[in-house]
Length: 160
Length: 170
Image (cartoon, rainbow over all chains, first blue to last red; front, side, top):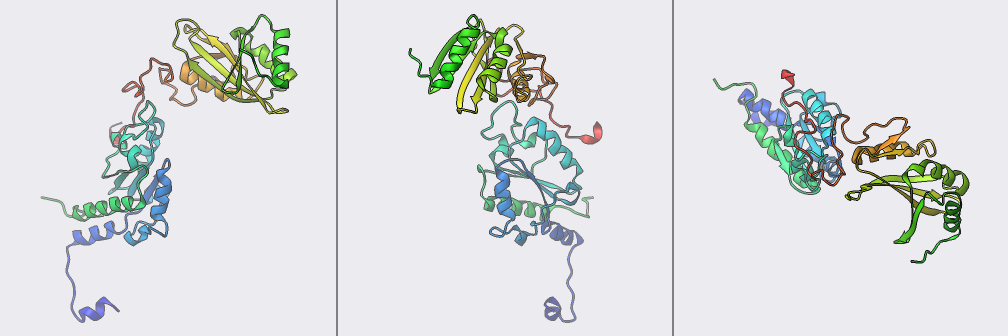
């Protein structure tokens, strides 16, 4: 079917790196770290209208062991930061992180003593999404940026 | 200033004047609410009286207030409700900055337990005979009282620990 009829007796070649990255980029399962109102937009991002399954990320995993992208959606208190870091440490490599919304990126309007001023104080963030809260399209944009990043990474081959 | 008191509040003020005339400091109204300020050392007996004799059975809230004055700096306000007549009254007491201490009313209204923990956490007002006086929001090893006026809005850098970002080196 499909590709076989187009190729006939021929075959395709590619690099293993490329193939693995293609697989990883199109199956980036999110770890939903919904802490505040951004979590509602994150649900819309996964829901049928915006339909992130077009990008292979519809499988929200509530176990860190099965997820690849952590979406930190909402403001982070100092007390909560320890739980988030613990979950992040339990996620298997390779892993990526989206700081969704103003609060997760910079502390946002919560400029006070109890809130961490940006999750990049304790997490390596790959994509920051502006907005309060961001629209689901913006989160999809961040996911696509992460897909681009995954596609340029080395997976099995190392620079020697 | 004339007071507009309904029957419940009139009974309350009369009852307090009769039984606690030396503890009652002032009664005033503002924005449609009635405030009664009493001596700090009498808060427990007045609470018992209000609950048992005046049917103020519901403690909605307890909160603190930093007046930032040199004497009687902190104020603790009890928001009470009479559920028979749906009447609200605020009872206020003031305490000194140096070693602020109050008698806990959690033996009268059990709901006061967490509210008093919050006042302790934010202002450092200690409640005697409280069943479990620990911080409720801030980490237990936190050394400051964040709602006091002298505490900076953004907190004191390094006073709350962030998670270790290199877990293998613990």
